[in-house]
Image (cartoon, rainbow, N blue to C red):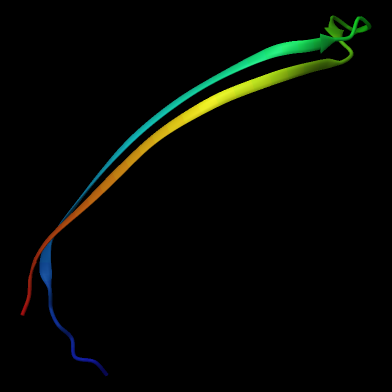
Length: 65
């Protein structure tokens, strides 16, 4: 059995998160035949972008042998 080594200290953790999203869509085709008040078929082109920033920091100050 390995020997036990006591360690005491403080831990501080900081996390930053930033998220930005954007999207565009365009109806390329809509059928003329309506079901209720909606077209029977719709084709869309969609484009989007996402930016995520994540930063984490852990600080440990301890004492031991």
